[in-house]
Amino acid sequence: MSIIVFIEHLEGKLKKQSREIVSYASQLAEKASQKVVVVGVGDISREELETLSRFGVSKIIHCPNPGADILENQVYTRLLAEIFEKESGELLILANSFTGKALAPRLSVRLKAGLVTGVEALPKSLDPFVVKKKVFNGKAYAYEEILTSSKILSLNGNACEVIEKPVESAWEEYSPSDAASAPKAEVLDVNKIAAENLLTEASIVVSGGRGMKGPDKWKPIEELASLLNGATACSKPVSDEGWRPHEEHVGQTGKTIAPDLYFAVGISGAVQHIAGVSGSKTIVAINADKEAPIFEIADYGIIGDAHEVLPAFIQSVSKLD
Image 1 (cartoon, rainbow, N blue to C red):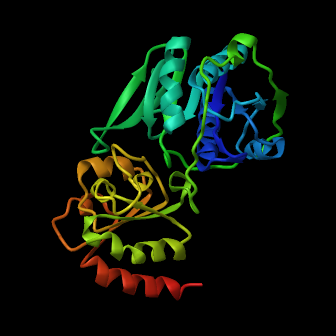
Image 2 (cartoon, rainbow, N blue to C red):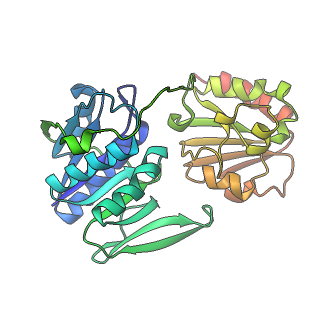
């Protein structure tokens, strides 16, 4: 039996979470005495994919399907289902990303597999198979049991420590059947957002809210993000007002992120915002209101006007080597 891992890449480079879910699968495989099979689709090099062998991967399957770099849900679903069955899969793991959220329910139906989304940790037990996930917009945890023989998990960012376990991985170039590769939709155009540091991939994110008091006062946010080689983000009210572009909006109705370090500057911490950032490893909150809900989830809090705190903070960071 195998644990199948679908990894994502961006223009031929592995996404940050790909290594996390492969390491998660490897640690689980060791407990369950199974092997890990990684599946990469589209224009990604063998050299890039083989870096995953550092995490205990038994086999790497590459499907260089022409046009497969444009996500077409039905094509990807048929392809992954075909590989899952070919490799005698018992568990399929994906990232809880936009792609994972599109594919996991379809695969669950096709494979008749129990599905748990937004998994936060390795299984509590294997028999019965019980996993931990966040509920109520990240305010609580639940333990869910999967009863089916085939299982699917989508993993949240930062849900597992990345542990290296170098092995020699087998390699396979896979050509799907005609039924699995035939697209049902025609993609007419793709508009990509150009960004210096992609928000969902950034290890450090500096985010601002209405406490910044206007679009013309955003320079400290950008300066701090630049100093830390991070990305900028914002709360929903800020993007709704047009202060910042909508692609920077993080929260329940925006992007869900899980950076190593998240700065919430002038953000009150409404439950909808917390739902999108609660996976962050460390949260630093800066707010003038000491009763702001953001302080309830923050690891570090600074009470004060952002326009007084940020310049001092930036000055201190700029002195670091």
